[in-house]
Amino acid sequence: MNIADNLAKQGRHVFFFSMESSKREVTDKLLSRASCLSNGHKWTQLQVSRGAWLNNAEDKEEFDGLFKAFSRYQHFLHIYDNRVKASQVKDLVNSWLDNHPDEKKPLVVVDYLQILQAEQDNVTDKAKVTDSVSVLRELTKQAEVPVLVISSLNRASYWQDVSFESFKESGEIEYSADVMLGLEFAHREEYITVKGNGHVELNKEKFDQRKQEVPRRVEMVILKNRTGKTGGHIFFKYNAMFNSYQACTEQEAAIPNNFNKLFHSKEVGKPIEAAVRDYTVDPVTGLVTEKKPDK
Image (tube, rainbow, N blue to C red):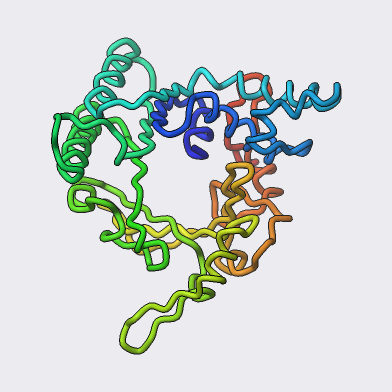
């Protein structure tokens, strides 16, 4: 969602298929994230949904400003909240491409793979995922459209290092994907001990504490990259209340409850002050552009 929001701000169309959250919920999450990144009042998704910003005239005026900023680029976000088949995703995007030949190719986001409707009736979960991945792969090859697909993980993977085996029905996912990224808690040694025989021992109390952290310390692992390096690690502070990921260094991810310093999402560990110097946001369109260096 953070990726979709950032691309839309840059004037790139995004087709976001959200099959768990309604369009209203997704919008509330985006507005909550925008408030977290602003210098004013910060509203959680629940507060946005309940209209907490209507409490007084000052809050309403501030929230109206956030909503106006969102409205400048929201037409680039095409949010669909009904459960569809992968073939319906493909047909809808292809239809849009036919009617907008001069537009940049959009990003397609599917949230999430396992609850796409089956292409055929009475098939196994594995067959359903295989068919869906195959159709989405055709979309990327024929229309040259990037498709970002969210996948659930096996429950056993919650306290093990994320790997190809972590993905449900992973065979077709591993084979077809150009890039595979796995999200997990950073610094898992805080709640996991690996014994000499390879047995993994979980400290349930510490694991529960990690789940309750604000923000959560998260690590992204590059499991597969068809045209580049694999095995890379990117670290984030994830504030679930505001649906916001902030990039940070590995050292910063080792420190719990340290959300006082924001980091720009384009370059890991890059302070927000530097981002302000290097990038500008058009107040009318919301377009993010990189400043040209002085000659």
